[in-house]
Length: 443
Image (cartoon, rainbow, N blue to C red; front, side, top):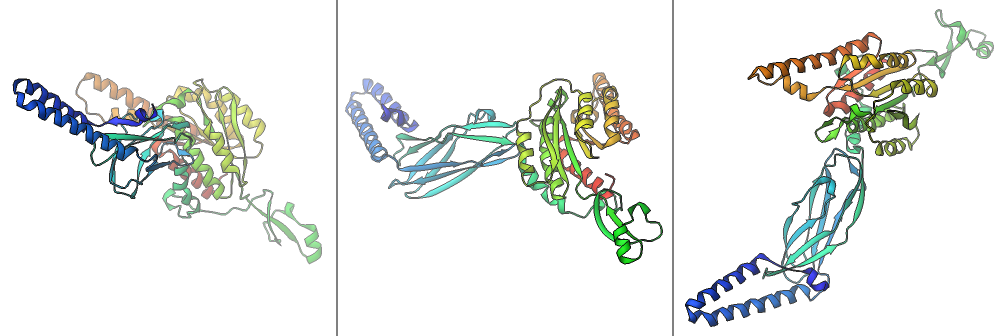
């Protein structure tokens, strides 16, 4: 029974058999063809038997393996490698069918290769996941045909693999160098150093007129017999929290990914830059309640903790409770921090409902609200008008686009920074905003 599961008849076999059947039909009218038809049938049977012997005399004459990354990067092209080796003593034709995870909905995957005896080969294909979670690969099926090409033998390599898809760590590497770039002229800012009164000690120096007498160091003054003061500088390690709204407004799709996934990918890349700039990165998510909290730290395992927290974030389709977010930040984040809030406001009325809580957060922290341009509205605005309906559609689209700009001005009025961006530019724009704030020393 196992033999018949591995045996497949090729198209060439059926074409020849069809020709023999047609010959038998013609032999009814031309009896001289009758014996030739039986001879062709016997030849087909003989060559089929030889083909079977060639392919089935050895148990495993084809080797194949699938190499999959340890984890997939969500929203990016991930490389899958198939390696092949022909241990037959003759050249073979291969048809490779890989059982790709059902999330990709690929039903026509087929690759054809020809290998000489003892030849090795490999090829690659790419998978582009659009959701986080587990992906299951099935068997790697190889159909082998000899030079006769009458039958094929199926080799099923049990390559069942479970691979998780994590937030885009490929983007993380892409923007890694931005953490070390000192060229900030593109932001129109000038890097400055401020002397402050935070708890990070810098040096003891001689008192000069204008120094704060509250910083006098009496022990050093007694030793040197002259006034000496402690000098402090702004803390190098600032707390930065990324807050992700996972309510229903973040479920809007764009190029296969939801706004929530774009925010998750941006959070991972920004966290890496924050840690490379010697700041402390933390995060939390909110909707009806606060979840996935990672306290802002600068330890070696911080990126791993953030990635594991981002991996399991799902939207719950509720309307987000900004009052609960305000209370939680007030209670649990005592030190002044940079709060990067990923959310989305479509109308000015929607902002006004949450504005009291945003203003409350901005009183104690530096708040940056990140929200999204609706790219479909831009398409409507730039669309050529052909009828009255197009005029109505374009007018409404311009109204909503204008409201987005009003939201930016409304936030600015209360000292709240904002980033209005397109989803595909989210990661770069948020990193730029962080570096701008860092260079200006306004935290």
